[in-house]
Image (cartoon, rainbow, N blue to C red; front, side):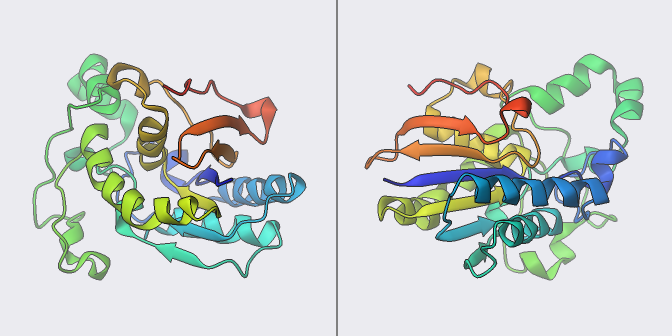
Length: 237
């Protein structure tokens, strides 16, 4: 039966600095590297053999994927990178300190931008420091200027259906090493989580979430490999 392993990247430098990161290509901290390796060690200890891995085009996710596969003694596994697995685009909030932004705009407004399902932050102005259109990874792509979790799902789902789901349907065990919001989008799709509930679903860093699937790719079971850092899982609908 198909098995999906979701792994959220380890702590990044901007996680540590409490800044809105989104599409900015920030690297892992030493702690983040340790979290990624721990994730791989848990996969190895659980006896999970990965057939193929998918990740975003952002360094923190790519390195998490590579470090985890290395720690799991599975560095030979093919890895596919795609921008549609990127973190949510935080628009005009990109690069800002979260606490300072709350002081400026009010805690309630920032909470809406961060946690509502379908209300995005202000758009990112073109031509600035974080104009991702200048990055060759995105050449020729129709890029967003901001995203909500809803629009993140809109870009993740076609890639899921075209690239990842067929591998699972073929019975493979797949690792997706990505970001809090792109993984949350996958969880919403698989478990049919209501809009109002998905914003409360948290996926801990470096703790593999193993989802057993049936032939129709419906979850039959799910578990975190590190139970001491597990978060509540949505019930399949």
